[in-house]
Amino acid sequence: MIEEMFYNKSTLIDMDKIFKKDDFKQMMIDSYTNLTNHMPDNGIQILMFNHTKLDTWIDMLDIIKESGLYITAVYPIEIERRMTQNEGNYNCVMLMICRKRNFDYDLISKEQLFEMIEKLEEDMMMSLEDVDLCETDERIFKWLKAIKILSCYECDFSLKEVLNL
Image (cartoon, rainbow, N blue to C red; front, side):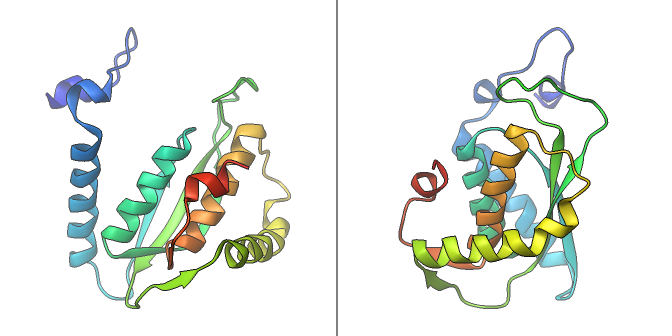
């Protein structure tokens, strides 16, 4: 089965045929939890990830939180190949710096989330001057900024609803 998961130039493997989504998500939580349990309290995990579907980013947030981590920084990293501007293509991969969570979650409102995203955008704009973000990258990076904040909070609203603006 593992051999089937590798990329084949003639066809892409449909992961839904290999794993149920919930099984795969739980395997990811178990893996990251194991890494978290074996890292020092001041250690970091660096995750490089990209996906064009919001549901997958929400799953990634669940994986990060349930494995005892939170995101301390996010960076779009330009990749060498240039994609066309078609829907779903991107020029960047997203880098997330994660640390062990040693605090309880506070509840955050939509208004607080939007205020924090705005502040985060102001803080990050200077460092992104030289990064070539296409439309898809910008949408993904917007999601990731919210996910960075929400990795430290609980919310009682639909993240999908908020980010599909």
